[in-house]
Length: 213
Image (cartoon, rainbow, N blue to C red; front, top):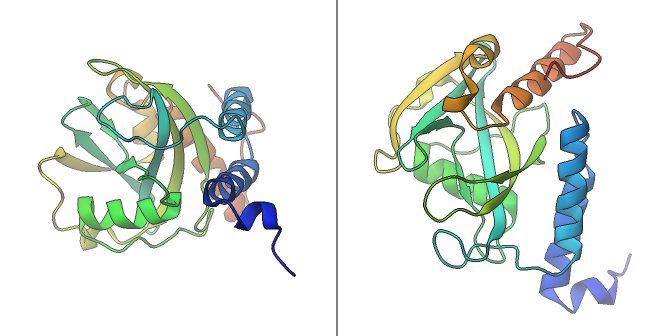
């Protein structure tokens, strides 16, 4: 099949089309994710700048790739104590201009955790979850975050970027849900519920019909 000229003649249009397809492929967990997916799709289609070009807030809305690292054998996920945010977050970072979101995951995973990014079966090399979040503190801005899911053995992570993170922790989904939300990404509990249902379905067990939060 010959690619559409409208997509191949303009790199920005091509990247926006690819990003729009990624967003369209995410199954919403709840009404809030449905709202965020719609807002993200409109932002991409509207022609606004997508990538951060100057720290911390230019442009005011920009693209982020989060990656949640799972040790599926232990049933645990990794959170990092982010120095600047003062929160326990998944690792990740801003997508560079003209960089594809999965490429940002691969780059950031190597830089921050010193391991190769291996996509977990739950979503492969595609985002599993999407959030639109207003940051807090100096340089407030809006992150449009694609959440990817990676797989590794917890023992493979022997170091981390200590300039970015002060500590790391492995937690079960239930332990994540027991953490107060004010020390986490504001959407972390929702992600944990969505992941728990996906795991239940993979094991052939019925998950909850609707989100608990």
